[in-house]
Length: 315
Image (cartoon, rainbow, N blue to C red; front, top):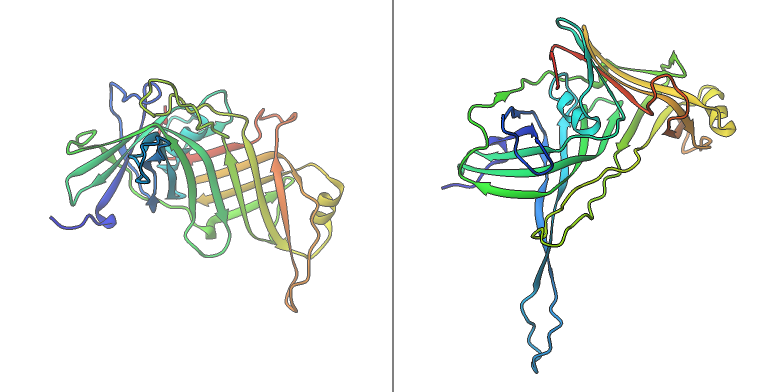
């Protein structure tokens, strides 16, 4: 039996009926991914027992931490399942392709399960009780467009039996940086060179219950935190003055592929006060950190994500 190769692995995603519990009706899907570092680790604590010897005693096993990061392509279909994990099920409209799925901040988000499939060894790692903690996107430049998703989970079990027989496999249909457009305060802006944003659910991973065998009893969510940066050509003072004066604005990042698109809209943002520095003889850039919030916008959410594609439902 040879070594397992990452190139031969697959990743399955499904949603649970309750935290840490497999659904009765399995609808898992094989999703495209670049890396998936989610794994279980268990601490071992030093023993303080004194036995009349300087030899160390066996350590005491501690809690199990299941966490890690999935790096996945920002694409048209599977990204909807990751967004559902972050926000909950979307509001979907449309009777045929293209369908529109709108995700907003709600009261709760579902727990997910993942299966790492090691085909070379005939082994399957089932990870239950996963929730999305951070969703990070960097855009601009010519690199592959991906999102980095931090996950917290409950348990991991290896088996020689797969979670689901013949699950559907989602074909890759990616967005690219060349398809990106940016709007600032409702108007297209062509001077942005790059940007990034992080949507954090502020999960609490410290919920370990007595009698729970060292596994998390739940992973409750907190208040979302949304922040990011945009870097633009310093060809005027409009953006800088907004940062200096604390002027409220909005920001939209959209990726368009024909009739399909993915849009991240932050209706209310404020820039942190930042002025440009001079780092050399070439053109001057300005980098503006921003924070998104909800005060009184019509969407009733600090972020609205609209995915337009050929998938009829993410329910």
